[in-house]
Amino acid sequence: MNLLGYFKTTTASLDEVSPTVWNSAAKTDHYADPAANYQGAVLEQYKMYVEMADRVSARRALTNTFFLTLNTLIATLGGTLGKELAVVDVRYLAVPTVALLVQCAAWFWLLRSYRQLNSAKYIVVGALEERLPASPYWRAEWKALGEGRDPSRYWPLTHLEQWIPASFAVVYVAGFITAAVV
Image (cartoon, rainbow, N blue to C red; front, side, top):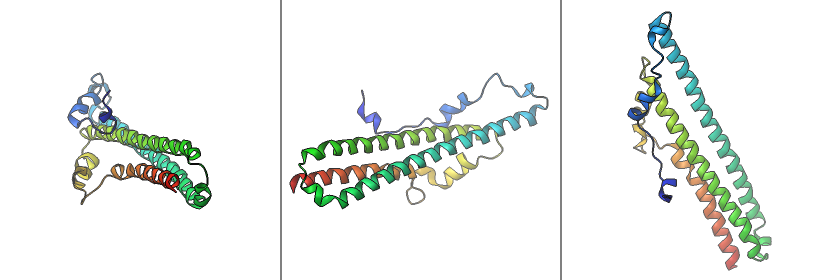
């Protein structure tokens, strides 16, 4: 098993995806007005697919909000109860600390999974845009943002948001070490 694969993300290219998007059985001559109806069908599928991609983004934001709220509450409680926790045997803090670290790891992997899912969805959006008169997302917007390669133009949110669970994990480990030393 390659553990590095769990941390590194890769995405299919538009060239890999484009041939698989189009259904070879659906031909323009199957429509009453081939050009207009076929193009209309592509546009409707495009709109539906973009909406699905947007819903994945909304679910990711909701997941992030849940974990951020939960961890903020836990960190606040830890800070508030810090003096009381200092007199507790450190062995009693080990299990909750491990549970918090597992929860941070789950948060990290969920964000990563949403990132991968959205990346794939937007590549499919790009493939669908090949059959539309304009390519506002795949060609225009993504190009205007420097394709996510130049942080001075655009730093993808998914790159930033994955640091949040790691930051909470560091705080939990530091709190445990502080409780163990004191």
